[in-house]
Image 1 (spheres, rainbow, N blue to C red):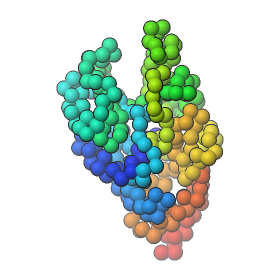
Image 2: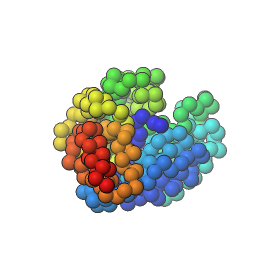
Image 3: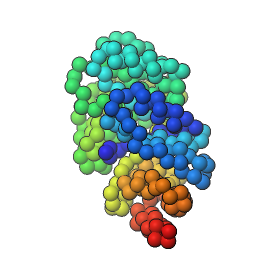
Image 4: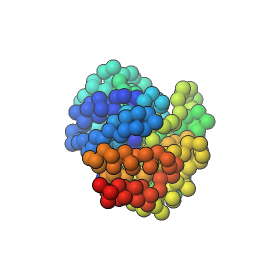
Length: 297
């Protein structure tokens, strides 16, 4: 199971998006599908899926956040034909940020936004692929030039982390800044991520549309990550926080997933209502509510 999971927020299309992705990536599966009732967004579909070894969470929770390319997903393809296959399906009803063609860094590459607003980088590579899908962070606007600083920060927060490779822009990369990060490969809790700076004019930045969901096993872990990452007090709610770069995270005990899959609707609602009153999640209180309700039933 993944330790850090991309969480995608949709208006109403989480189920349809999950169906597309599950059909597209071999070796994929639906882990769970839960309807969470009586939230501030009404009843919400919550899905946990695995795509080619990478876990994703998807939620339909209203039109409050818009997905954008500040977080994209790099798909490593073993052939040019595989790039074309993904491109054909994902571009349908979507748009193209970088056209399908040959580039200096890959003989076959495209950056597309699918019909649901999720951004995918499709790249042919002749190198062995350890991880099929790599979440990629793009630092833009006031955060442009801070990708390397951010990656160094994240690798101090999480155990099992490392900066694996850094490639900088040269002097002729205008408008990108010389020596800013063209590509950084890094590992958090044993999972591969990537980051980059972009000085182009972008009409987007990190938001809650895509957050990184961090599984924890103890309250001490929750406290550690919360204290290290949270930098925007007003963004703290239901286990969500924003770091100093504006990136959204969710810090949650692993047992919460088990609770949210409970088939007893009243017990599920009791835990949900308890969670909605919290900023940082209190693992012991959530367990108390769950166990108390279990005993009463």
